[in-house]
Length: 402
Image (cartoon, rainbow, N blue to C red; front, side):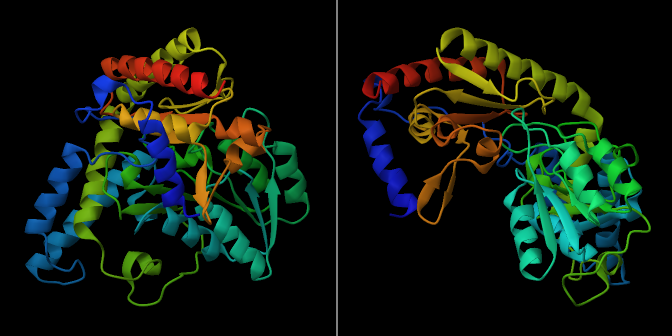
């Protein structure tokens, strides 16, 4: 059975328990899935539109229209460099997080790669392909708080690992990894360090020198930019083999005419985060605390995963004992709330999250979890409304399947 048909069958079942008052009108939408993708910010949309209209030239052309496009790309590069805490020349523009991760992993040509068990598929699948090509891959475990085993990384480095790729913040739990310590260990062993920072950019303060990484991946649509524009930080002096062949764009790392409007919008989103990020992170942390405190006070048998770990301020992963997370997501969707589960749809079957099972949760426990990820569009009133809807949905589902 396909994922689509499975979800449709479940949706029809949930519609049967939908409150009568809500069945006659489309509910107002409240979006709590910012880790999947964020709405494009007003600043980024303005930059995209204005650049698309005014900077239509090719950035490699020497005439005035081409140079206007080049200035737009250069301005964006400076803005992204400010967000990352690096030099503009260390920023390579790509299409997004997946390409950035792949360029880092394949570009180093490592013979022994170390990753964690909770990486994003962009790293997991790239590592598996490297393994098929003859590289050795060590996949280190995490503890019950979602933090990588540093002793396992140290052991792998002693065994000759030459590339370490550990995500900065996890997309499902928000758990933040000790990247600076990992980088120090790796460099002492002579290894190169990459970090998937897709879920960290815009959510934590970034300083590439302080982190000590050699390569760092981001994508714009996780912090108010458009889809299709991302970047790879490449520390000055790091040699990276290109994956594609063509022109000499992006310091010969990524050939192809740049996506000028998308890059300009990415730069605008990065600038906003650099200027307002600290205040916004405090606001999101307060909202996340409001959500978790209310859920734990009002809903029995609910547990916040990774609560004891350092986390990004916008992310909360909560288990609702005895419930099916997908059914709960659909019930909330019908009430006007966009939420995600920790489960992934693959090969026609709904499987438990590889992140949560790596932390020691059982299949049933992992499938009972929801991920709430907040962003600029969320307010305290929305959080309160979400908790009301969540309490009602949990009670209904538990009555149906105690």
